[in-house]
Length: 46
Image 1 (cartoon, rainbow, N blue to C red):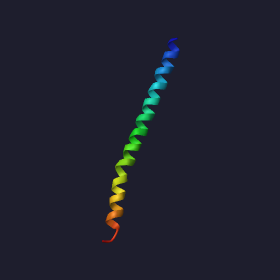
Image 2: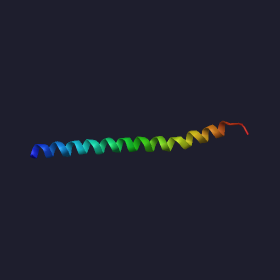
Image 3: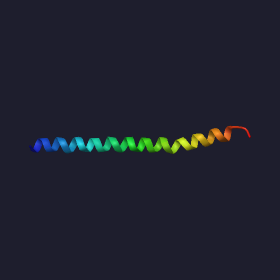
Image 4: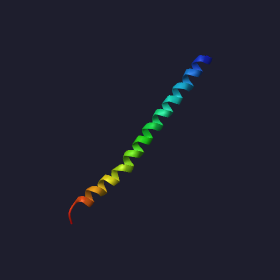
């Protein structure tokens, strides 16, 4: 039972680390999206 608990906590740690990484990736992508839109608008003449 102790081994099972260790495996469970370890997998939970990896799952939380993975979701945190995905969250950071999404945050980075969302932070860059407005910049790209502004650059396109600025490059447009007029």
